[in-house]
Length: 148
Image (tube, rainbow, N blue to C red; front, side, top):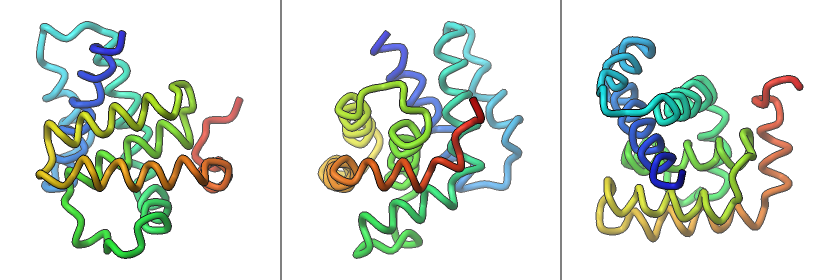
């Protein structure tokens, strides 16, 4: 399960990065990354859930990131770093189905694999600060949660 979710997060990161850097359409980009026939349906579904949750919410997620890392202007932040944080914030603040420590660990692992030498430390620091202010984050992002 953990390995499958990690793969789904990596796919979601790739899709979000592509969307950030190009003018590609969301559905076309998702379809392109889902063409890998070796992916099981659960991985594809979780990756799709992440992308469809994060992409439309990115402005609100970015504001939450900025509150926790005001010394790092978002426009100067690497797209990979920003999207790793967006995914983690959406999982922690909106989806809320995975323990916070697991989400932070998964984000750090993505940072080690896809980011620069300093990305993992940066991501861990920002997410640690967010974990300390979890109630405020969840209140801020509650508007993004689907109605029960």
